[in-house]
Amino acid sequence: MYRKILLAYDGAPYTAAALLQSAGLARLCNAELHLLGVVTTSGSLGIAESVGTSDVWGMEHDTLRQILETTARELHSQGLTMLICVREGDPATELATYAREMAIDLVVLGHSGKGVLPRWFHDSVGVKLLDLLPCTLLVAQAREE
Image 1 (cartoon, one colour):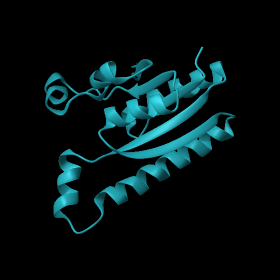
Image 2 (cartoon, one colour):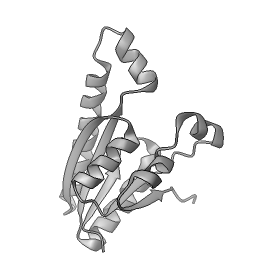
Image 3 (cartoon, helix red, strand yellow):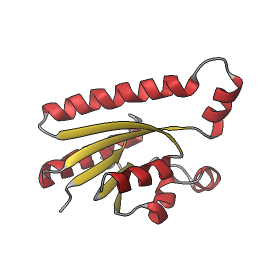
Image 4 (cartoon, one colour):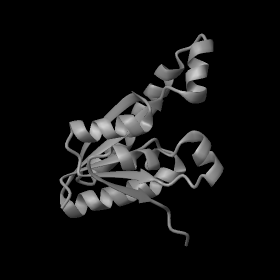
């Protein structure tokens, strides 16, 4: 069914359900799991980079890489085949580009629970991906117990 699964992951609480579901699907399908983190180079992070004296994008990149490496070690110890990557740019564009480059079959995102106005003002990554992806998109949401 799925040979390569891409998880957009940054360690945020809303991505926990996506992590569980993508790992479960990778086990079921004996698929390769790709963890991709994207350092957003626009918006408030872009402003901080342009006016600050420190390398905000570099620090964000290093933090994200550490999160991905820790998560990959945990999943690898459970028998999953893992690849990790950190990119910079627009999240939807970077996810779609990576999916094409790596021949990904399924992209998994976590649902952030943003309301309608925040999604409208900040552009929903999931909505953008519907037009950009060459494969299936799964939006994972935590179950309320």
